[in-house]
Image 1 (tube, rainbow, N blue to C red):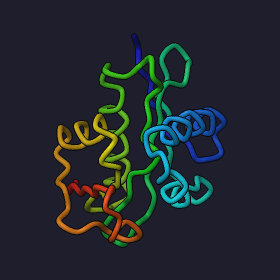
Image 2 (image 1 turned 90 degrees about the horizontal axis):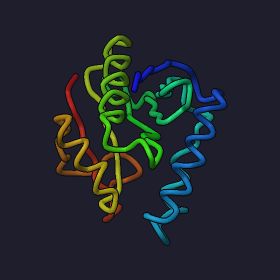
Image 3 (image 1 turned 180 degrees about the vertical axis):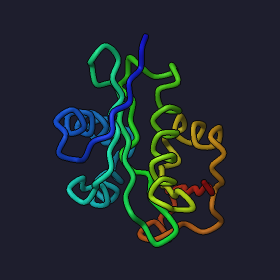
Image 4 (image 1 turned 60 degrees about the vertical axis):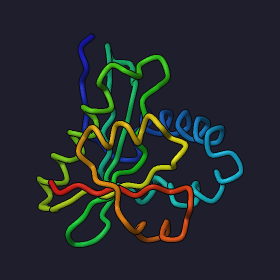
Amino acid sequence: MKLEIKRTNSENSDFIKLVKELDAYLKITDGADHDFYNQFNNIDVIKYVVVAYISDKPVGCGAIKHFNSDAMEIKRMFVSDGFRGKGIAVEILSNLESWAKEKHYKKCLLETGERQVEAVRLYSKMNYNLMKTNYGQYEDVVNSLCFEKNI
């Protein structure tokens, strides 16, 4: 299994396809809360995207978006069902962190739902710290977990 990570943008057709898979997955896990979260996930405002490929097949994605002068926000992290548990998400997240660092940002922020147990495990493993107070639009959202990491 040779993994290749390609940097691209949100107009990439493989990224768009993977985001549709992600949204279908989140619609199930988020349940009634899906529409609320979905409003914050428009990909047209995302400029920095990575897509993971195995044998030219797109199997995962992630993105970073400017949050403030110090921080980039990690968005649209996803690995297709048959490819989970193989370290692909770690590679995607590491690549996004490197890209944010190259752009002279000092930290990465992200939000995930408490129902996304695998995501919470990944971010903890990758040394993200749970924030005491949620940021931005997630400030008063009970089911949201916000994380940060200095890079």
